[in-house]
Image (cartoon, rainbow, N blue to C red):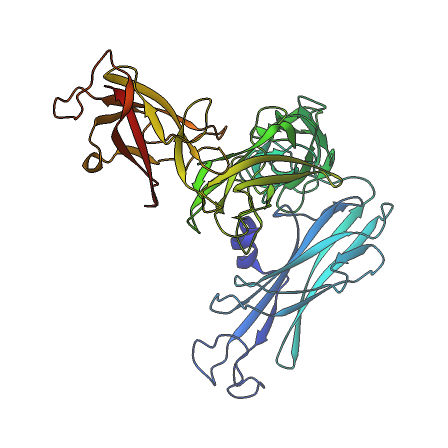
Length: 506
């Protein structure tokens, strides 16, 4: 549009002169637009009208094309008149139609007002005049431009030289597999191209066709489009049922049937729906201190699709539990980011028998869902204690040595359930209360156990100290004569003592 301003404005052959400020019959001080000399100073205005195709002035249009009627309003000092209502009409009133149909437009900050003009029918032909009228105060001013309408296609249409790729939405150039959805993720993308001539000026009215490569991987929703006033065309694609990467090609023909093309950036289609084999939950720690309300662990869900990709962000994972508490008050679950999300499980009433089951669920489509479950051990939940036992026997109260030094392999467990004690529990000999030399050489601190099995630890007992009475006799008969006090302490500071009477050879 701008290219013709200087020459057109200089001539203003079809312009009308008008008065805008004080004097000359106008109301003194009534300044509709700018008054460089202040109120009471006469300022003249000029209006001009033109018919253009893609910014180029024309005197003839085709009956199947759309062009623009453009009016320009300035004052005698060259200042643009902004916000002026301009009404466009046709003298013949039988050849043309305007869009909008009211035939009105407001001048912009540069003093221009424009609307689309096309033939009334595809068979229209003849000569006519386009007029533009503007009112200032109580006076109306007009200008006109004569054109002819020729039945058929565009007249002197600009020649397309290139199709440039402009943008894609979503901006990250990635959509998800059909049916996958997801928070902030889309199954469709919009791609915009621009048709320009050899001077990089946008061209309106060019027929553009679209194709995807490889074909069949996505659905091309708009196979053809016509460029608008800014030379822009838009197509959309919808994802298929498998991951892939595609490019969209836009093509158009020149008047010599030469094909010009433009290609989009690569569009990635990824992330499908979750599958049963790709959904699991795990705990950061499986053995908690059931005596301490609020002792907690993080529960994480991991979710992938059939292609090994994390599912789209925003997949909702819900959690329930029979004992203790899981998730949060505002959301009984979490939303995935990069295929994972986490909630907290904490110890609290009800505690049951100390074994909580946590079930996580994700929806697959509208009518089905997948779930996974884990258990959390709340050791000591019933007020029970930690104690050592032999691999095959009950909780120990006596150790019988068959030699003066001996290693015992014992199991530390929850006295009521027989399951593991709290992870991190330390095992030690209370040396101040033992009259035998003893030490723990393995199993402390207690490692977390997914199976909840008791913890195997080794206790070395030495009865060779000559101060021990009676003195150990390697060939003697084991008799009572010693004692060991064990201490088991959880990370939360709860301590459990266990006393062993020791029989050694005498």
